[in-house]
Image (cartoon, rainbow, N blue to C red):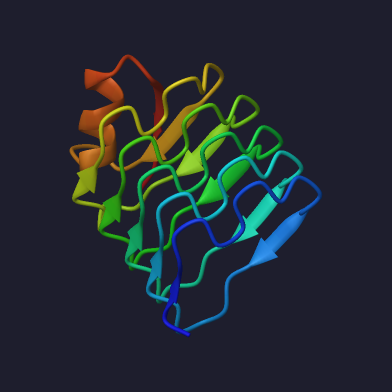
Length: 132
C-alpha cells in the first residue's frame, strides 16, 4: 500500500487514533474527513503529500507533526479541526493550499523562519512560533 485513498476513512466517527504505516507516500482527499473522535495521528517520513480535505472536521485532533518528507499540504486539509492547537510544519513543505487551516481558531503553527509555513501563517493571520 502506497497511498490512503480518497475518502478511505471518511466519517469514521469512533476512530480514536491512526498510525499510518511506513511506505505510504500520500494521504488522499477526504481520507479522514469528519473523523470526529480522532485525537492522534502518526504520519511516517515516507508521506510526501496530504490531499485536499484530508483531515477536515477532525474536531478532536489537538496537535500534529508533519514529517520532514512532506512537501505538500492540500486545500482545506485541516479545515474545521476546531481543537487543533499546534502543528509543526518542516521547511520541506513548499506548498500549503488555500484555507488549509480555516476554522482552526486556536492554532499555532510551529515552523522555521522564512519557510513556506512561516509565510503562510503571517499571510493568513495565524499565530506562529519559530523553531530552530
